[in-house]
Image (cartoon, rainbow, N blue to C red; front, side, top):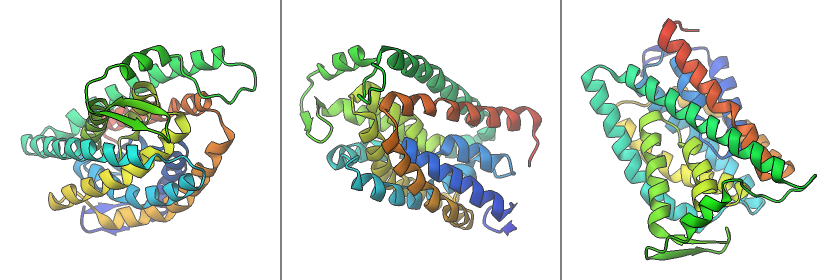
Length: 297
């Protein structure tokens, strides 16, 4: 099928399947799925600027579906999500501007590919260490959400630079500036690598802010709705969004998101984090494949 906005020929079946897979992953892990979507769009010939902008557009609808399900389970901290949206939007705009600079310089694909590989592999390496250690410390059949990184998290929470924010739903009291810093970094990667950057923000909410994993998943999806909507608008103005591709992907994502959200109720926090580990590795592998072979599916 030919998509005139981006000038790409892509199978709608392929896009629907990718959307479904990303929907399941997003509902389960609270991520936009850009570590899969970006490389998956790139591998069929889409330039990185279109892959980034189009991915942002499609995850808005998917996240709405997933958040409705998570909200029913009590897994969304609205106060935290609204605060984070502010920092994320600022970071996303800077990330989008960096994309424009690289596009004008003519080295967009190389730089984004290298950065994405480094980020994805770093996240996976850290999370496999932490989640395995947490599971080793846990009592058999325990569903308590704890982290081997908890001592660092508690030290961060003791940083009392005012104003101090109390989050009753998450059971956390922490400096507003730390929340905004986490959100800004996530937004920066969102605008630069595409998606909602949940692969950065969900782990950061757990390890830096101390948010329970299930709440981090649902809250990140809620925040993604706001930040990805802004990111979509920003990239659309710059001509980086193929809305037709996004709509085709959403047909699969809407179904997958509900399945993923429901599935979180059957797993403890450390197991969700351990299951997350292979996903950025897969994304890195796809980027490496396209980077060094130049092949397209």
